[in-house]
Length: 291
Image (tube, rainbow, N blue to C red):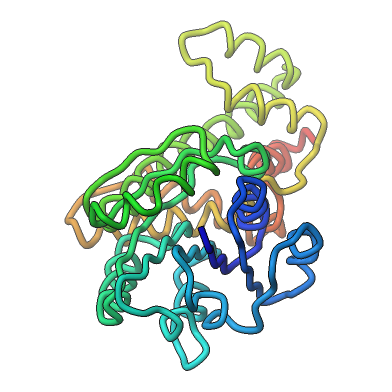
């Protein structure tokens, strides 16, 4: 397929590269063109604008940091929307929230095209290995067209019938993940304050009924103080904000999510926003004065 791909960030670049490796004819655009050098050197094409990237394609992907970044590439005379024509399909891999999925779907429909919200579950390493999980939401014909490309970049694909449901599913999953991560970091700091070594805490936790691959993976990073971003704290805070916005619109109460967001926000304020979410434990350890 002829595929346009807009947004070559931490997740977007390896996903676009996997589409190239799967044999698709890929054209890419990124605000910082140097991010496209690897894909272009392997045969991909570099578009001058999002509109050019989207025009004449069988499938168009966007993969942006948040709802503001998504709006910025969709709108305007050189935006993605301007490049879409009747029957085209736009797949948004961003975690931009329920409201943004609804708005984007309406904008795309006005162009006579179809929209899929398809948020990503997984880390940078999973994206590199085509092992991410995807939740695709939108009309059946659009899902059918996108399905081969989505299978090429993922380990599992779940489908729902509306973009808003896919967007909400991602926020629900990340609400659980945020609670797990912050509770884990806080507990590791509690143990460290009493002289327990982090690796021993993880060892015992993994032998319990509360074990999780997440604790094993992030525990190793905490032990090594390796906070290079696999998933940035600033993005985790954004996801909790979007969950709260969805809850407000649905009339749901999310007090745990509110506490989780405050923890991530505190880490951002403490200068850890660009670090991996495991650095929440680093903040807790600092509070416990047991770094």
